Amino acid sequence: MRTLGLDIGGANLKASDGEGLSVSIPFPMWLEWKRLPVALSELIDQFGAINRLAVTMTGELADCFATKSAGVNFILDAVVEAADKREALIWQSGGEFVDVATAREITSLVAAANWHALATWCARLTTSGHGVLIDIGSTTTDIIPLERGVAMPTGRTDPERLLSGELLYFGVRRTPLIGVLHTATLSGVERPLANELFATTYDVFLVLNELPEQPESTDTANSRPATIEEAFSRLARQLCGDTDEFTRDELREFAEQCRATLIGRGVSALRTVYEGNIPETVIVSGEGGFLAEHLISKCFNGSSEILNLRSTLGELHSNCACAFALARLGTEQPEEIAWL
Image (cartoon, rainbow, N blue to C red; front, side, top):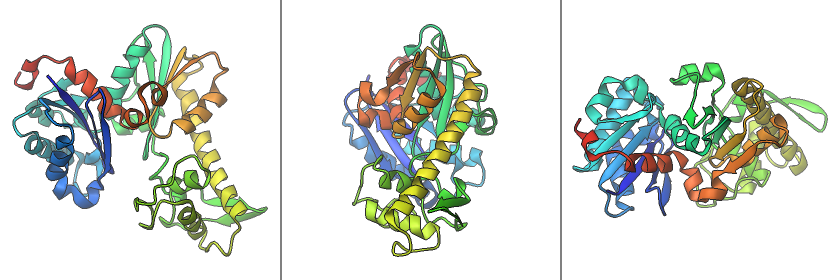
């Protein structure tokens, strides 16, 4: 029984067989939702013979859907079409897989449940004592308490998790900088930011050399290449200027202030979540693992064991960690679950 984990997001589609291959492709749900069945089929085909799909989603939050429930049902329809008679298991934040029919009845638990699948699998790495999972992706950050091998979130839904600090709506690529800072101090002068989507955190981490250039990618604020040169231009534009109006050092200063603000928010949330109980194990995943390391260094005294999935699983699996976890969890399920 070969299982494929699918993490259907609002900006990316991620898949993993839980073994040797994980794949992430850009997919702006709010623009291309009608293509979802085809995109999923093409993604599944990259993995050869697959018997079962283990699915989670966050794409239902895209504003092409009138409600989250409508989004969940649309995505379930796409999964059924792409599955082409394969078994389809849907993860829900109650902590187990259900079939598609049941998923339609509990859309509030199926919506945005990818974090819970990852936390459930990662919790097995902390079979005793306190632990915490820090997953920083392109769009969001999850901070999930783990206790004796079990995920122990305070919230289940996104609104509940935002309130508890277990969900932070920032990541290392897609977060608009106007959502990070309203002013920046450059060469001693406080400058307001334009209230426009001119630059994102991707540009911050490009110019700070913490994310690699991808000249072929135009998944940026202005749909121009994801290069350091273009990132400087986007940062200048966020200040209503061009690169001939600010020095590189000033724009790096701007980027450093954005990074410091993100770290501050993450540190505050992390301290709220662990409530003074220093975790014995900290698990790090996602392409923003480098940012998680800043949070850890500021919060913990070095006594915690750090497990970075990028080191243990490799970069591709870590960047698709939710899909990887789903594949592993789905493989454990009996075949009957698909029709129970």
